[in-house]
Each structure stands twice: as C-alpha cells, then as structure tokens.
Amino acid sequence: MSLDGEIRTLKCPYCGVAPLETTVSIPIIRSQGMGCVVTHRQLIGCCNCVKKKIAQEIKDAKSNIKLLSTAFFKNLNNPNKKIGRELKKDLSAVREALTEAGISELPENINHTDISYSLAIAMIKADGRIEQDEIDAAIQVGTETFSDFDEKEFRRRLNSYKFLPTIEDLSLLLNLLLDKEAKDGLVKFLVAISAADGDIANEEVKLLKTVAGCLEFEGDVMELLPKV
Image (cartoon, rainbow, N blue to C red; front, top):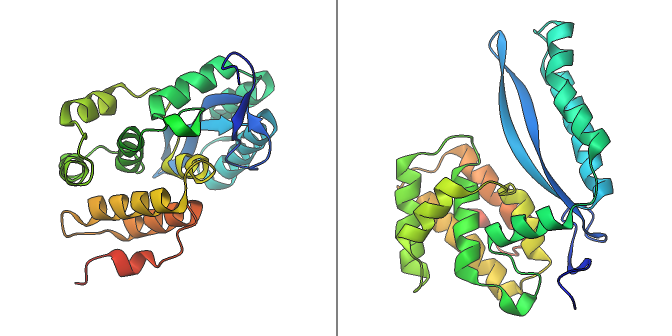
C-alpha cells in the first residue's frame, strides 16, 4: 500500500464504511447567560459524513441559542456554513492529524503509548478547560501503565496539538484498528486517570461511558470506578 494514495486501512469513524478523506475544525456555538461561548471541534472522516456533522452543528446551535438577536446569530453561524460549502478531500491534512494523534495507517505500526497521550489529552480538554490536577493524574497513571510513557513528551503534546479530534472520534477510529485487549486496556487507562484524584464528576462518568461504548467495551465502566 502506498501512503501517497487513498487511506484505505482507516475508515470514517462516523459511518465506518467510507475511507478517511478530510479533517476540519469547526466552531461550536452555545448560549451562555445573555451571550454565547464558542469552542472548537476537530472533525475527521469521509467528506459526506463531515458535511452532515457540520450541518447538524448549525442546527444544534440554532436551537440552543434563543436569547441572541437574529442578525448576531446569523453572523456567528456564517463560518460553519462556509466551511461546509468549501469542504473538500484533503488527505494531507488527514495524515497530519493522524500523525499528531499517534495513529498509523498501518495497524502493525501503532504505538499504544502514543495513543495514550492523545486519549488522555483529549479527555483533559473535553470540557474546554485544562486543569493541573487532571494533567498530574494523566502523568501518574501513564507512567504506571506504560513503561515508555514520557512526561516531557506528554506535556509537549498537550501544548502543541492543533488537529486533535474529540475523545469520542478518536475512540471510534481506534475501535476499527485495535484488538479487544488493547481497547479494554485503554478504557481502564482512562478510568484510572479519572479516579486518580478520588473525585469523579458525573460529566466524567458520562464521558467514560461514551468512550467505552465507542470502543465496544463489554464490561461495566461503573464496576471499574472506586467505591465511595
């Protein structure tokens, strides 16, 4: 297989059928008080599915933002509408995003420690905030779990990621690549990070359940959490 052509070994995480073709960052717009907050999500998949995701985000934002003026909302949504119209196949960007996430096109070249960096960072960034106790927990659990886990490399990636997909999308991608043992190990790794400080928020539990579902984890995530 030539790495210069189509990405045939990796499938779109949304449909699971078409090959990976494009990746793009879109603004996620939500109301907050009398204004709004804008975060960003990196989408990666086939062109058809990514366009559907963009269209759905425009609908979700419209239903969520009810207190803002029509003109303001229209201006705020123009970026996603334009992104959807101009979206095209971009294998170079996809490969850059995969490399950054530690995901190889060739399953035999996948490095589980690289993947652990990406998943841990995606989980830390999931709520839009980066908190020191979560970073410390990821380093502690990573060092205990992977013999080659490097704190300096983890911190470098934490500060340098540009194209990292959400933890849900990463998990969907990895579900198509990894065997059951590897996927189960990653779920337990993320649970250990969440439980490291002894205080697991409901949002974290929900996120862990989502990841477990994406990775087809057959156990009960709640059974892995420490009893309080």
